Image (tube, rainbow over all chains, first blue to last red; front, side, top):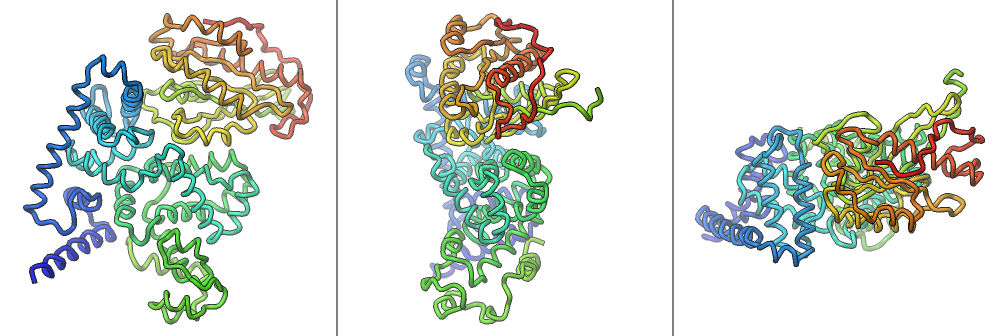
Length: 355
Length: 210
């Protein structure tokens, strides 16, 4: 009974957070608490007492790690080139992270020092990864919101767990995402994908910045927080950020193709979208695309797998066969809906959420 | 001669070097004439355009490629290097390590990009942050340039707008010379449709300038 009750509470808490995220009624104070769950600092099923305990332990752990690098002697540093390099890179990068925002502006800004300390402590937490460019961009909004060194560190750890493959030494994670993105574009916008292939851009490198720091450079602070919440929650599907990319590309398709842009112009055009994107529009559109794929009898397993949809075993995708019906059981009327008509799905996406 | 009849050339020039040496600042200074201490670090690549009325008959559109300096993302560079006609390798006078990285960047360039006829790209070296540490020029630089057939290097300051225009002019001169020497006018990589005229901006500055 006790267990059922606690599961029920956990479910309600999770549901509550998701409703908040979806309806975007998040006030900063609410957001402060929601993020700690989304980033696995607190577990959904924890009690207040347990959370207090976690906070206490995490605080001790953080300061233990912080002391490790702060007490490093000069000789130790001199004999530790990996560490020195990371330290110098972090120092460089925090001093060019969001300096145009008041929160990080000006000389000797204490928040810049905090970014530095948290990233240095992360180096001690995960020395194999250490510090890679882009990480300061991922940290900055978290500190801005939470304004607490320890909480920020652990939430950042949670975020890094979700995107750690972006920073692989061999960049396998980034390469895979660029490939997945190409697969999705080829499915949703075959004309655009062919165009990109024929214009030196099939590698999708022009989307590199979007993917590396989850649109941090493309959106305002407020908008990026809104987007990250959705992505952290895994709503409505894994790899939803790739569908955000598809949504932007679909929007820009005519501009790219009608102007006959090549590799250089495409990169320039995409880079210049920075701070001109409407996050609500993109969320709606991306969800519409997701619904379209979810319901499409033509989506092949490659596409479905990227978005965490069950595979269609039989492989015969042209006619809705029994195998696909098994998986698409919530939608008995599918056969009658022409999924290729984009508007239908987009409308659904728009009416479902994010408004 | 009216603008209408000017010959237009497009030069893609790479700016590379270790993180935080001031690549973005140099590019912004050159292309936009501004400096800010608030530039963000570059992710992937970006670029700026600058139009040069080189002489009465020639207009040169320079495309300056700002390429992220972090080693981790090195696999991207070969794509960004494509079709370049010259490069500037930047290091930071206040950080000696960044000078040693110049060799690494040069090797990366030599390895991944060359002119259509297989000749190496003309390269110059920029010793940046000269406003802070102009006296810290590494003594090995002359030797390094000689050994690697680099004809010019400059102490620059994006902050104080020192030697940036001079250095970039030098790059353009080298590109023009290269193209004249190699008769590359029908190259399919950049738009070099017509025969080049003798450039009048070559001020003969072949030695290094401080």
